[in-house]
Amino acid sequence: MSGLAPVPDAEHESVPIGSNDDVVRARQLVRALAQQCKLSLVDQTKLVTAASELARNTLVYGGGGVMRVGLVRRDGRVGVTAVFEDSGPGIPDVDQALTDGWTSGGGLGLGLSGARRLVDDFTLQTEVGGGTQVAVTKWAR
Amino acid sequence: MLKIGDVLLVSIQVELEDQVVLELQDDLAARIVDSGASGVVIDITAVEIVDSFVGRMLATTAAISRMLDAQTVVVGMRPAVAITLVELGLSLGGVRTALTLEKGLEILARRDDSRPAQL
Amino acid sequence: MTEQDIPARLVELLTAEQESLGAAWVEAVSRTLRGRISLAELDRELRELYAALVEGLRGGGLDWRGDAFGEVRALLAELSRTRARQGFTPTETATSVLAGKDVLAPSEDTSAGDVRAYLHLSKLIDALGLFTLEVYAKTREEIISAQAEQLMELSTPVVKLWEGVVAVPLVGTLDSARTQVVMEKLLQALVDTGSDQAIIDITGVPAVDTEVAQHLLKTVVAARLMGAECIISGIRPQIAQTIVALGIQFGDIVTKSSLADALKHALRRGDAAVVRPGGRA
Picture (cartoon, rainbow over the protein chains, first blue to last red):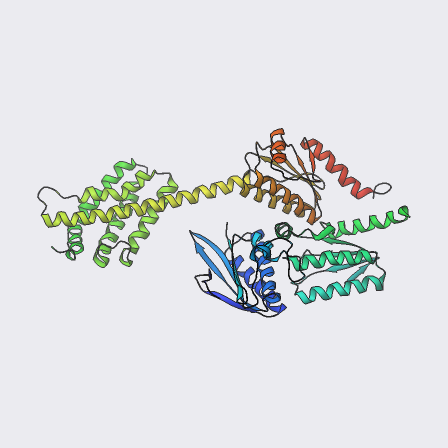
């Protein structure tokens, strides 16, 4: 993948995403960090749900990959950033993939667009045949 | 899975892995037929997140139950979960919901009482 | 005297008359604060700062951002935080630091080299003054946001109106953040009180924008997902016009003109839910 990921600048943890178990583990890790940086309960839930959607995307559409997650700081605020990376087929039409109800895999088509609504920052980089990288951040209020 | 009267009670206690969610859906359909239950209560009080996968399971389960002549009520959804589902854009496609297990059972009992009247 | 010698010379000048210069500084600052801080406290504060400044110059030269000035920065941060909390103005706060310049100002018989050294010290103190102001502003911001938060808590009471009915009367301008807080509190109240009817009364709300209207809608949908019903009451004509003009669909949400009507409706609906069919359950 080209391009630099907006990776947590501090120490971050990596989780491989290769099975359903890993999706659960990814959720738990994100929740632990969300609690650590004192996100409100609603924001925690939103972030963990977004992470769950994205981890499943990585598994199902990307053929597995990795999640990196860590705390980030900007302008005196603290947040949690999670980056999901796979080297799968990539997304040919990003705009379409971000449209509600669009799916290529028999889901509800809410994964990407829904996840984007649940977080504060959302970036997506993809390359057909070169994999996909999605980074999301939620800031403590 | 617990049976109270002719209502099946499913209480989800742990963080669900996708495979378990699917198995639960299958088990439930089988149990409805075996037991002749007329109602299903799915208690999600302990569930901390409902993503589109679990949400879809709830909606599908309700639809399957309906075809097997049992009504489903989902009870105990946490506020944070509800807010997140709305933001996610998931409506649960007409699944009945109730605040508590008690109220859920009330809804199902009412439906039973009114059954003869509809015939 | 070369540039490198300046800090050393300053240390020399400052330590030689540490006692009297320090006293003059305290004296100058106490005049501006007009007794709102005890002389003893001010004396301790500024002499500590003076000593730290000398140590900073000794160890780190004129680089106030460096490690040697860590103690100076810590003391200044502490000073400006205290001042901000006690309600001193930015000028009064900055003067505590800047007054040091007057005290150390050269006189007619100061040598040219010492004047140059003073100019460097003056620049250093200016920088420290600005640093103080920055901390001051930051502290004020913290105070303001803490107050805003308290106000938000105060202004959004969720009350139980009846068995099974909670209400939140909203008063004042709703912004997106406040609406979100209210909604979370309302939904939590449903759980806490076991109520399946909620009334959102917006009689006291002068206007809503798209975002706020959307939040209201989302709350109603979220409440439904939890198994509760919402009624929105007290919609003013202007707000109704706005909502229609914005093209926001309120769909099948029940709206009532007054809180009383809403309560009546909630009770009827709650009742019907429990008693049907044929007599009280």
